[in-house]
Image (cartoon, rainbow, N blue to C red; front, side, top):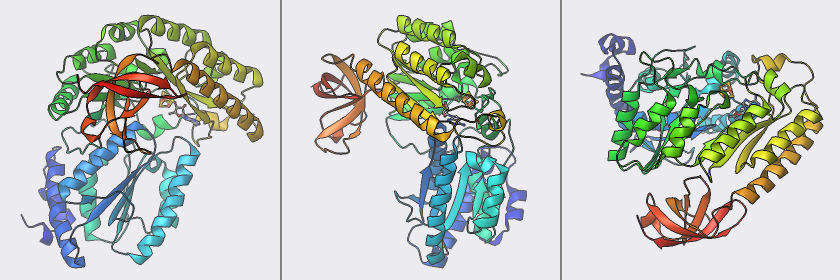
Length: 485
Ligand code: 5AD
Ligand code: SF4
């Protein structure tokens, strides 16, 4: 097939309707168009760089985008000094948006000097119509914009860009489609995220995610297990099951299954030694799940359980559908069932109407639960969410003061509880050479605590027994006991 002499419209008529065959067709087309593009500009290679903002969902999406671009024939590079730059954006807090605009401004200046370079934007921010309007008006140099629902279409969209200089915008409002079996290029050879569901139905009143990621859709368990088997065959030992609310996994499938049941099946996959998951909603965390965690040899003793607020009154307005007491009871139940488990959380400070008393309830929960660590966020008003329209937004200075007090408590609590394995021998999955000292390697315990110990690159991806000699506040210094299990 000669793609060079075919318009995009002609190619669309020829392309298969079914996925992933359609995208395979467009990847092939892009490969030819890319070669022609390189010949035209006398380029030896065409480099790309993806900058990922936000959560693990976005990181995993970026691995999929990378897979597609490499299949087409682009070469990945570490910096934005690339021929094709793609920002995978986040919009959960306003700061995330501001960062994207700032970076984009700089990128625009670079494009002035290198007009042949291409710039694309995707991810959660693009699902907001106001953002796309602003980009169309003030950032005309952007070549391609797409959303969270059609990242699988990258090749198809790029094939339009190759043929014209106009901005291409394709953002879907929603989808019930899950496209399987497209190429993926993992960042780490030994661990991988695995999407088990997309979207969120909870509509917490402050959160924009349900609007930009759409309604909950679960992948079929067979597709998930197949993917994990393939990952294991490819050397992956740790998987992180990803969803906005993994505890409601499987409820809308034709043959519903529970998240706990899915975990039992993942546990059976040979070669996988560690299973993690993210994120759990307290309201949906079942006794069945606690039981599976208790029995499992592979599920890591770590649970990320977003609290958001310790005040039952605020939790109600947040539409979280649990109370302070229910959260405390749940945390207690989990700790009793899985001794030594690390609990981590997300907390928002300064939600509209939050009083000093409400805030002290949050502090109280942090003290009572003893989180290993917590992500603390200043409430950020997201247009379109119910909370954005609420009165009594808390004054900035008050929020800042509360945030500082909370951060201190969170750090002090973490320093007290996370050292519980000091002077014991534990298994560490080695992830990388230490950033600051190349004689050390850095890895993680099952409960996610970081460990540094003397070692070399040959240990990366291995699970090593390490004596945890000294706890340093939020990480351990150790020494290897044997090289490999
Ligand atoms: N403002 C501040 N933090 C927020 N989060 C979600 N929406 C907002 C918001 N509008 C936080 C929650 C969530 C985490 C991913 O981001 O704590 O768990
Ligand atoms: Fe946002 Fe709540 Fe859904 Fe989490 S559960 S993504 S906080 S709406």
